[in-house]
Image (cartoon, rainbow over all chains, first blue to last red):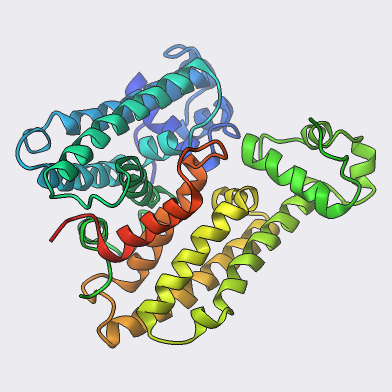
Length: 192
Length: 192
């Protein structure tokens, strides 16, 4: 079964992200992308300047999706603990819905301007979360004993880790995974 | 400041693991390892057959360190929730103490026999943990609402994520990081 051949930049980006997520960005070549897309390399270069431009499009998609969450009403209003819970839930859902984009974002490293710009946007996202955690700690709804940066990094570390082990053939449903993640992050696994 | 030039297989492996962790295994070359070690490629090949043999040594070190934890008295005896807490603590400590080895282990992918054997050992480790979680759920000390596989994957996902963001220059101490991880995993961040 083959999908329709991609002939626009968005669907070529879809294919490239799947290839980057599967092989790793460094190891993947434009030949791999062309083969997976079922079109010639020349027709890809008709749309895009090269591999790094495809990476940049993927990283922008992933980061735009994450920042869009912060602008949703339930992320912006109400008690901090509720905002955090909503954001962690939506980040997990977004990760599972856009697995190739987020896999590429969470694994990317390097010193190129494209990568550095993406990492800077990730840090800016983290800073928004840290600010909410700090306010939640100040008003007593978030555990004050843990450094707000550590709360942010560890909880998103847990959430981001799903790209390493959650496959499309998994017997575990997305809703179950998201609910389990929320339960551990906010209530822990110990029975009191 | 330069360390003494490595002239035995263990110290060459140390250097190789740092290079693999920094550049990624696929992107790293034996030239990179030789340069970082300050010795010739020929002297590395005197000790080891090639890059994959160095990877295999690193993966074996990482996995031996993880399995050694399971054989420690506090991992083997007592109530399941206490065993789990101890194992999560020791895995985090081991990850921070052996950051290059564990970074390489947690990132490695591919279909080579060396990689597949390491991934099989990782799955065997996970199965040991899942078994303890299941017993803890049966005797009421571990939250029964979450699938035992998900508890295992998410908590180690959180713990393993430290290799992505914890650097040697971090202002956060190892003990603080480990304590924060334990608190989130077992008690969550919400104040009740």
